[in-house]
Length: 107
Image (cartoon, rainbow, N blue to C red; front, side):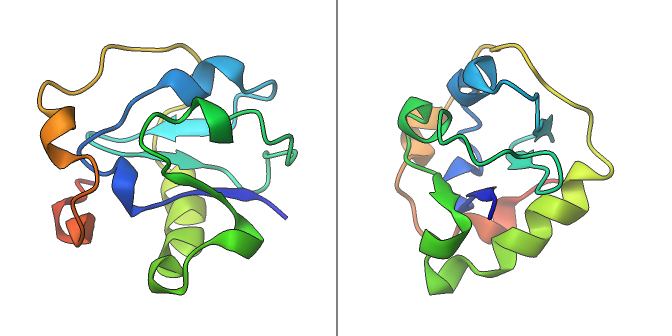
């Protein structure tokens, strides 16, 4: 099993989660983070650190976000690794909890 970053991270991209990851399995895009499923050790440390509740255990991933499992794996192959917390996106509060953000994902 792995953990998956879901839709609510899009345009929020808070990086509190990367600080606690013992294996540095997070990768950073312009407005979204992903977890490399091959590197994730299922430790669960990142889940409570996500201020927007965007990280799910693979088995708990909502069915309407199933595509994010494959999307995390795909983008982790091309995006750079991130292991230190950064400032949040300027308007992240506006985007927290907004449904249907998939179209705003920047590659």
